[in-house]
Image (tube, rainbow, N blue to C red; front, side):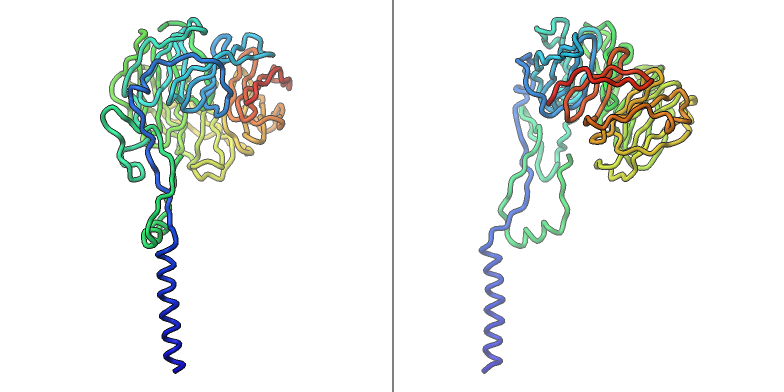
Length: 406
């Protein structure tokens, strides 16, 4: 009798477990494409009233103005005639923009797949003068997380996530995998930060994606794509021009290209290091490369590397210095500035590159610092605290003159 009762009890528990699984709601995160019409994307950029800086990307400066990219949305324009009192004066509404560069009175910016050229000769009356269509790749590939990119007149510009109801078995199958969603034609040229993906040299605009370089002839108002994209393998992060060379910072190292033929840069060498997302700047045949932890590159090293590039075909490691968490960097005269994220910004005298660790001028910890642009008159810093400007020298002067907060 007891044995029969035990069998019945076991069977009831088993049935109960199955019914619980059937009755309980199981969900998995599913990525749903955000689709808009291409016609909506191709509306001309519009200058609207200033908006708050919420999600800053690249920083760029030329003349009396500073331009800050609002990621995927447009470009803030800041009147910086009086550096002690910068003012937001307008916002260029341009969807899908993350990179910019300026030559003369023309601003070049990406808008998802297109390269847009904007006349900024009258900052209060900006207007599109040309658009080169379909020259940048859609970052959302055709098979990205089970969805197909829209075709015809509609395109995918992103993905959102919702909870999809599934069966118990589908829930079990899903949890055996690890999914993650990754995140005028002539004139002088402006200055960008060390995290730039656009750079202008002479009459050419060079643009790097994560895996290729595209070249545009900008000698005329219409930016014309030159040749096929140059394959760069993978993991490209930044681009920096120096004399007749282009230095590309990547997750794997530093690539050096000779642009003597500006329409067909020639790969000279690759200086490899441990996997790390890093920018690079160059001065007097020395490349300054930072490596940091806390990125999707899964690096645990925080340091500054010095590389001899006097022979760009054979770069040689010089030395390295330990850092806290270096993000961007900038160099002017004998001053080197390194932003350290939540740890502030450091300045060094680099007249003797072999003694940098003994020649730190200052470490300012009271500001969040992502990227920096040192100019002759002022140093511009961008971070979670907004746009902060300083008067400085290489002897220790570092005085805040203004802050435009987020």
